[in-house]
Length: 315
Ligand code: SF4
Image 1 (cartoon, rainbow, N blue to C red):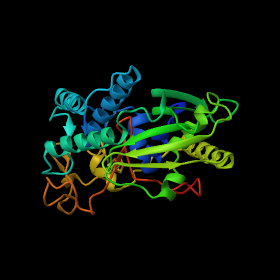
Image 2 (tube, rainbow, N blue to C red):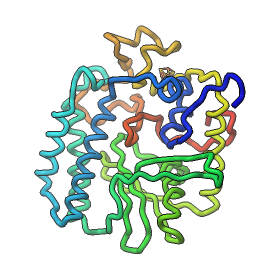
Image 3 (spheres, rainbow, N blue to C red):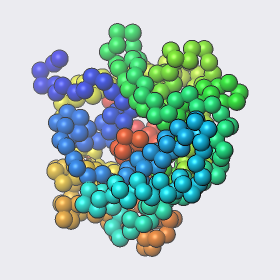
Image 4 (cartoon, rainbow, N blue to C red):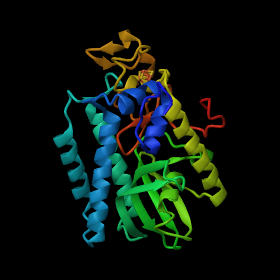
């Protein structure tokens, strides 16, 4: 390892790479310096509760015991109320009540339940499945991830399902370039050899299901591009901060050298008035509001990153 290069974790995930691409300084705080944080954003908190409820729902359905919608929603509110701690869970959009977010999670689950009941349209092969794999034969580029649900569809295809609780839905082009689920497809290749695979996203707020497929050549290019990002991380020494719409949600903004201190209040970030809704109860938040997306690990990332054409530059 070259002098001055800081050791970084040797097993990667899409989330780690996305954190680095969004902001190298945040990556350094989280994965190199491992600075602990005891807070999380309300969006991440709601996303985790929704994932937990869907996990339980499919496990029950597997046993032939599909719960009623009322029970599912009751479970969600119980998990929400047991886990919510106003001192720990941050609401960045000043003035938006916690009930707004709680109801948003309920809407996500209600729409999904009604669309998929009685949950026999496909065969569940795995729920919250951890997958580990290498992008190269020497196992230098090792990855891990957790797949929300692995499915055998009616047409025999293996599907990789992912639940999203964010507000915005990407374009088909953005999904066709998405890295996360395509990496999982690479990770599942040994488990399901020579079987057609499909990538499936459930955008729960909008009750929309979107799909994409990858050719072997696309997966090969993705693999090479992803290894290039790992190489950039492994040779990074500066970890410069990169200002973006995500900074207000960043768990390290109180120590960040470029985050405006006047945006911190009582140790928390405060979204500017132009970024907050005039009517906090209105689910249709201002279009000027940044839309971080919440990944399963609770990390927030910028919406739909383009592939990196130049490994040395940011798209
Ligand atoms: S506040 Fe913004 S620039 Fe600073 S570390 Fe966080 S994401 Fe990076």
